[in-house]
Length: 100
Length: 171
View 1: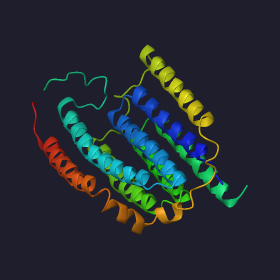
View 2: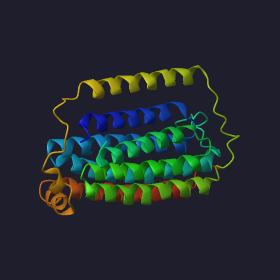
View 3: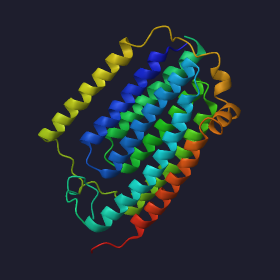
């Protein structure tokens, strides 16, 4: 059998990959995909904890995280389209005025 | 090595590989494709945890809906040319890499050494807990109120997305 710690290690690795992408990459869409990856890493550890401890709350939380991720993806991509229409770029270094 | 371990380690390997490749790709379309591979492997990992319902919903929602949306936006914005997005490594980048790698080492240390070693196998109840029947029962009794609230969240997201993407701002 696979111990719980292996799932947690994988989840930790995926989460830090997501952090690395958010900090280092400059393309807004890739930053966004990294955020999705971080949400997924947390989902994996929630399901793993839930199934190892015999509690269904972990799966419920994952279900709601998925709803939030879907809503976030829709709104976030709409914001990116709107930004692109105004500035003709998705480079987050050039998107630096918070006043429109 | 048992069959179970073989499945887990190969899926985990592909997951790690696709996550790293996603970060290294310059073209956002390739990144999105590697992320889809990552999502499919995570769906497989949920299956190894006996969470069938979550595995299927994960593949349908992430690989089916969210990533299609991403690919659609990438193609809509025509981001194929990466010359305009020159990613240079400045001081801030090195600081960012140092910070993230530090976080990674910290998390791996905590999870690798501080997890109680008694959790070596799935709870016997996990087989029943992963089924649609059980998840539905819990979702519509104990978690009924949050479930209803999510409908408001989705409605707000739909309206927000339409408004944001439609609005003609200053030219």
